[in-house]
Length: 200
Image 1 (cartoon, helix red, strand yellow):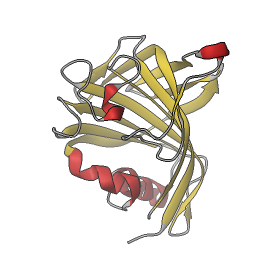
Image 2 (cartoon, rainbow, N blue to C red):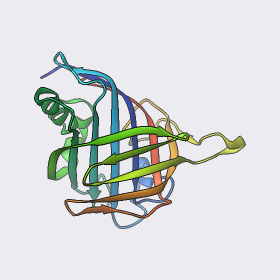
Image 3 (cartoon, rainbow, N blue to C red):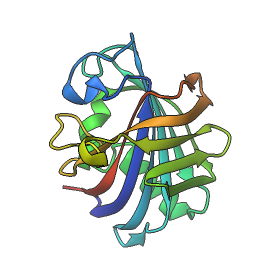
Image 4 (cartoon, one colour):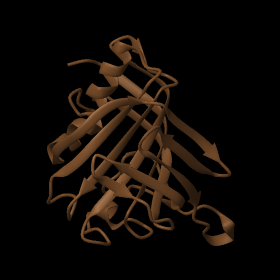
């Protein structure tokens, strides 16, 4: 199996209330959970192929408790990636190369689509913004806690950034419509955090 590592920043929003109960291994707020996530890779490589500076996004629908159902997912890979980079990112985020996504792969019941797209990911006023050409976008604001400081969750049982505190946010604006996966209600759950992944 390939040796790889990635680090950078990620953000997500979903159809659950704040904070998302799925991260605590509970049932979603509604009957299902639709999540929209994006990653900006600052540093990384896959068997010597450099991956720094590239972006990836995933759309996901779980028709019930995330640990008791099969997910429907769509993947978007930065259209600036070369062929080797694109294949590497598809293997990593598709779970074929082990690591965190290898652990999650068993929950995927259907891959609705995989395609290249222009992906923007940036810090925005203390929150995060990401957009995926032809699929949608999200504007995320941090939730203010005591003293106006951002609320964070440490050591969540289910997290896309293991080992890192999740900053709790909410979607100021969100749109997602692709492959039958849709999300469009503002004010619901969001998280963002740095990430560090390895092949294990």
